[in-house]
Image (cartoon, rainbow, N blue to C red):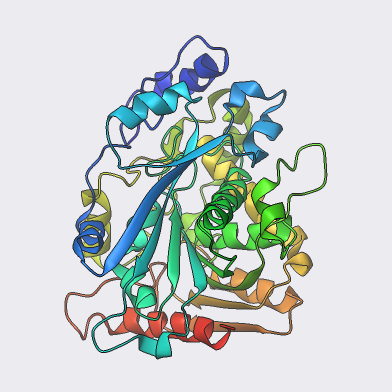
Amino acid sequence: MPLHNPVWEVVEPYAVATHLYTPADPTYGRYLLPHHPPTQALLDNPKVHHQFRRVFLKPNSAFQTWTEAYETTEIVYSEDVEIKEKEIASGVKRGGRWIFYSVWEMDEPEGGWEEGGKGKDHDLVLVHGLSDYGLRYAPHVLHFLKAGFRVIIPDLPSYGRSTGINSYLPSIHLLPAAVHTVLKDVVGWDLQNGRTQKQVFISGASMGGWTCLDYVLRYPPSSDPVKIANSGDANGGPEPPRVQVAAAFVLCPMVEASKESVPPKIVQIIGQCLRATAGALPVVNGVRGNVSDDPRVEADFFADPLCYHGRLRIGTGLSLLDGMIEVDKRAEEIDVPIRLVHGNVDRATSYHGTEKLFTRLPNKDKQIKIYDGYEHVMIKVGIDAADDEKRQRVLADWRGWLIERCK
């Protein structure tokens, strides 16, 4: 939720950095918000098992530069949580900076596993988009669980039950660093419980799609789970190893903005001038109103209290631009089996940018599909079977492509 006071939103990050102010709840009221109905349906399913966890990082004030703070992947503590009020106070005592994530598994469904259970012993990481949080994927999780996948879903920094001013991203590199931190914790958690490192698939939509691309770009793979679990920061040394991503399925990635969602040039110039001093200030609508022609999509979004309902913040918007520029410069280094999908009437991110990116990707196992008539939200839940057919088409494509690459 936004802080509702633009002046305080500008001042607060500096007050925290200089130790003049410590928020009693570093998630700004999000941690204890109720589950949205699709998440509650997963929690109530007797065959589905979950684990809520959070991973602690050093507070920003512990670093000499902002860059070091934003790109840290050093875990100082991690724990299972139950989303209880006492966990806010205990989290503040541990430094007040954490990444929340959930892990989902399923008992064998009645009638047996779908896809022959080929997803068993494989992990699927789902990375959310702008203004969302991880469990906005909740309506689609069962589709992957029924094939045996274990599903890992982080809340990126400043979203959901992770810490930070809601949807304020002073650096785009917070996102891939958070994904790496979560996966390190999962590997360490598995080792403690006698489980071997799993083959990992990574997927995301929009900003989450960009995060998947940059994650593959920034962290070199390793087959050594102990090395992964014990790796520290990338700051001042070689990049930390990451799990071996077997493949990436990326939806409507944020590699080029559609013209309908690009703010006027004068607004961009003013934003650049204010970025250093007023980065948290919410200014423009961004993609709001451009994600779907179905009003139920935005109605559901605004009905979910864990989503960010405010305007795009200056620092966030410019960080997203930084991310698009980075991927454009280094596209040839994104070397992983990959499938890109996009809708040809997307008014938030441009499918033309996805097509241009595809031509530059080096991996021989690469595919692209442009879905005719699809908008930015490609997996909109329908009100009946006929209305849900477009979502089912994408989900079948998604799971089927991953299953083909399960070893």
